[in-house]
Image (cartoon, rainbow, N blue to C red; front, side, top):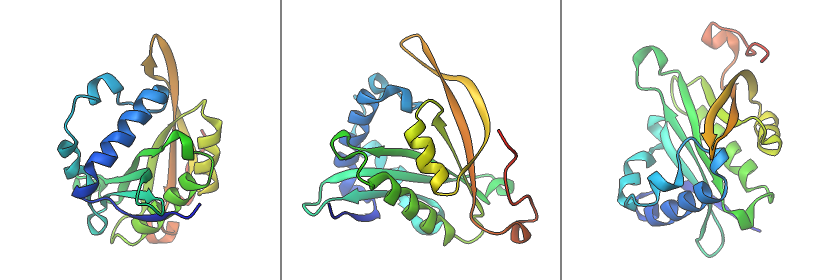
Length: 185
């Protein structure tokens, strides 16, 4: 399967909303957002999230040959001056029928590459449902390291799910004046 990864634009809002709604419906334990609160939102409400790669606030989409959105990933740079070196990786989603075909891996790699080009951005952080071993491995293979665990970070239908906090440095420790590896979880 050939995919093309590019930044999402306003014209992708309807496709993004459909992907998001389906992801929240089929894998509620993977997200802090919930389907019931999101399904009624208008697609236009998501456009402001797409931002631009230059700013460190962006969403990338993976598209097939026919132009269908198969997956996406977001990068949201921290707004406060003393946290501008950090961005959160958010909303990693791949349509159920296209999962485990390397799309997630390609999206994570493209996100890291794009974030690495943003001046002053030196690290990426994310949370992932700790019991989702496949996705945890995907992030580990991309260079993310666990640094903490929040027990029962989300509760879905009465069941608590832990969230694993992960970090990936974009530059060497010498460039940022800090540790080169996060502490062990």
